[in-house]
Length: 615
Image 1: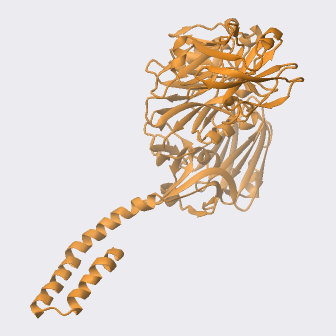
Image 2: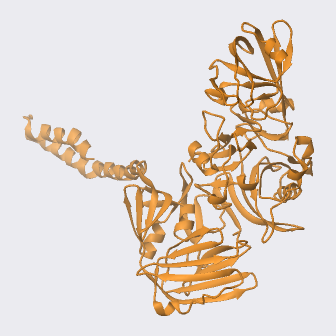
Image 3: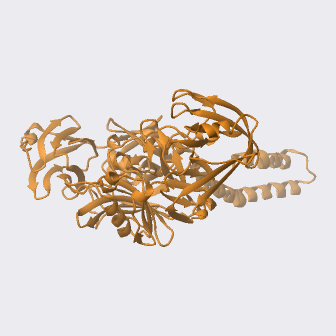
């Protein structure tokens, strides 16, 4: 408005008021019209400018990845958005782990009810939610306003000051399922739990008097072996060691304000949360004859235009290497992910199909199960093979043994630029044949090299491919420099070649609602087939939705076998399902953190399936 006045109104006023104008009546009418403009039209422009201002301000956001709560420093994404009412968002898992908020079931992705010293049935606290590049943010501003928190961004850190609370009493008792500790507070307080195997540390932003410490019974309980409390001026630290088959669950209740610590084997918190359009986050116990298994899952509607599934791997420029799934997902900027195919943990090479946007990062092996999908939300599952045939210009023909794969043996392996810029020989004595493309599926041998010992590194042709000839002297002799080659490739089933994205695992668990488990047919050992361990899997519902799931050890017992995993996926409603890599690889990532396990217990993986959500 000020700019409009300077550019338009002020010159008009000066022209009418100060320049010679014939007749005082004309000058008077000019001043009258100018006054009318300022009284009637200018306020409308001012209102329009005021309405537009929040939109312009909303485009600017302050963000960071550290949160300080009464001096406790947390790693958590946060974002401040300036709109008609200021919003201060913190990544929801940061709120859970760093401030003590508990997420409740929800049906709207942009509105998340939480429990924090509130009755989850009668007075749930509803926070606005929005999707960011790393995950979902919950607006703490209403909670901060009602609870008297002081919130201030300071560089990369969001500083939160919570009014100090006082622990007025401590109660402890044995339960049939484990142990319970209750801390009575004079007002709500934030808290954080850190876990080590068989040990937890609760840091509570509340003072504890020496007299109250005497109320804490330090004797062993059903699950707790030892417990101690360390008071401070504004914080109290409670440490406990316990049976490694159990875990702590910390939650709150109002009237009076209480922090409750339960140490029990059944530690999973059931959840059914609408996390984003087309994405549900579920946690539940799935009961089989052997007992209930804790299952963490995401149900994804791939037909949602804002949702995309993509294979991900350690390094977008290199098919070799491993990393924690959390690191991998953040490198690819995926909001969620699950570990996928198998790999050689020693040389960090893939052992199964990974195809992204029509490019084979790694080819299938041993006719193992795989899932293929497109960007329209259609998917198929089945046992997958890739036939590759090499023909020379003089009529000789060779069947290739693998494509960009760490699964090797006597024969010819094919390596393309999607493998990376270099190739390191996997076996001793490989004969490396360098081929340049002529166009289409034809090429020409430009040179051969004896790699000698395993680990010899060479540059891959940027416009062609490399053939690694292993224990096949006749093939090496048939491929001298100058030989013209024709390469053909075809998938079995042929329908897989119509899909740009493929991820493999194995064995296949379900097809058309029926259990089709046959580990031996996919090259798995009998020991692998009977092993009980944590497992990851991917399934398809009848409506085309995709389920990615992680199942863990049942309380006091072991994880599921392959047969039990097939039953679990059936109970989740899947008509088709595929087992993925398991054990320490079993990882389900959502919004910045693993939701199924302590990340310190998760192994590094080679590849996964990432979920990308357009904010």
